Image (cartoon, rainbow, N blue to C red):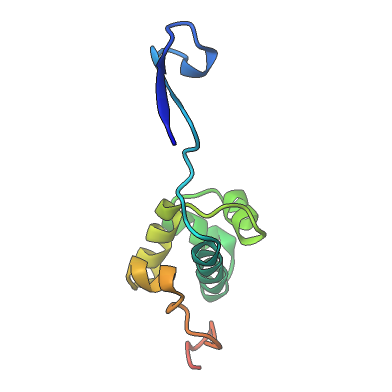
Length: 109
């Protein structure tokens, strides 16, 4: 749950008078998060490393490595990964991309 508080001197607000309180992380299930991580690792292998994937999706390389190692996956990241892969967001979330056992080099199962 997210709430808003008005505090002109709140350090978290810097120059704003309104601060958002609550978790800003998307509420993806554990299964959806793992599907996102699997797609991320597949795309890394397909692209030849973290740097090309990071450049294509607009995240830092370190962020992608942290996510692949177990940090939380945001819906925004999954959306960008799906766009990069040319599949739908729903395909990634449901685990239909990449197909189980698919080769990251030739995409054959």
